[in-house]
Length: 194
Image (cartoon, rainbow, N blue to C red; front, side, top):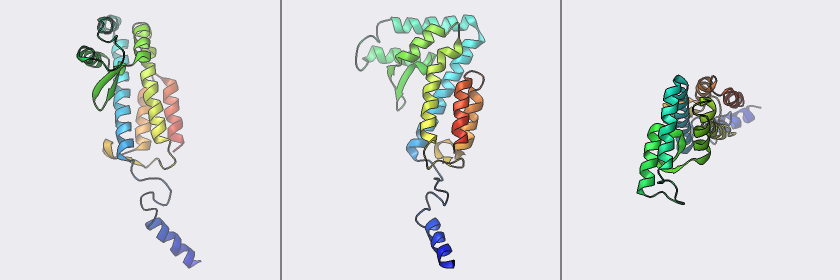
């Protein structure tokens, strides 16, 4: 019996040092940590834009009109990679409503058609719905990254000052509750699954 206990101790201290005896990793990989940091930032952008739209009908109309003007100027109509005018238009859109553009490494890359369509359709009459596709995309990414078998409640996110995955999910759940209750429930379920 002592031999078995000693062998298990060696396994926990040796081969499973990175995962701990629970089989859960202590820290997320740099890539996963970066994805969670980016998803949280993008989710916050969607929340901020939706709150701006909810604050004032006149501000919602003004913001929608500015987005429509940029999209309607023709610089984003070409197929493939945007030219310099398209990139400039995407930059202006990112300043107005960051959730409407697709970024890669901090650079704007494309217009997100589904999210832009929802924004233009609902910005004035239903701000939460206007930004729902953007928020849903980020919640799906959060679920994917935190849903791994090796991710536990106490797993730390290095890119976010070693915040635990459980705390990260709890904050995202709280912040989405009033605008997107269904997304908040999905985040709660992800937290329960840790």
